[in-house]
Length: 293
Image (cartoon, helix red, strand yellow):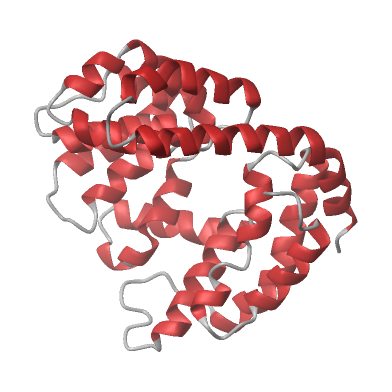
């Protein structure tokens, strides 16, 4: 993000780390390229090229490790192997958008939600539920919301609510902001849903605009101190000089003198630097990404 590493270098690093037997190394194989993608340095053709690159990089690993999603399918396995598989499926279902992997996760989620609890191991809740929700709109969000409120399972309830909050769907985001309220919803969970809307790219702008208009209530409520402490991380995904200025103006006075003041200043600096990097390197990064094979 400082502009010192080329796309070609980061791609070579990703290829090497993806094959590393140490799960800590293989787990961060794509972090460099993902940081560029998250900063908006890849245009549409470069995004397609990046997906092909990730697919080609991880396909051999997918064939080697397999991807049985059923509960306990890999019980007793070497933890290093398990972690490498998690990183592989994250890459195949996420950046690569591999149809086979996405379909397998969706079908497992469908079976799980239909009552077959053995169809989906808890380690895959996040990926599978997010894929299931995609395209289902507010009706799908209401389904998961009702399921979350009906269970106290600590390995499931947070994932159901987290999936809704981080959907990136504008209609779902608007529903969360205005209507996703229930006496069974804990205050921390309500704030978590709002944080998801604000932090997720597809709903980030609308979430931020809503938050500005309700900031007094959010900061003065029973969970206000916790909301304030996490506020800088919620808005850290923005990437523009103009947005950095607005963050400083909108939030700086409200967080002055609090424990979040320094972190907000750091966030404003990161958002500004990201905007500068995007303006100066996007053409080059997109061109170099398209050249990769």
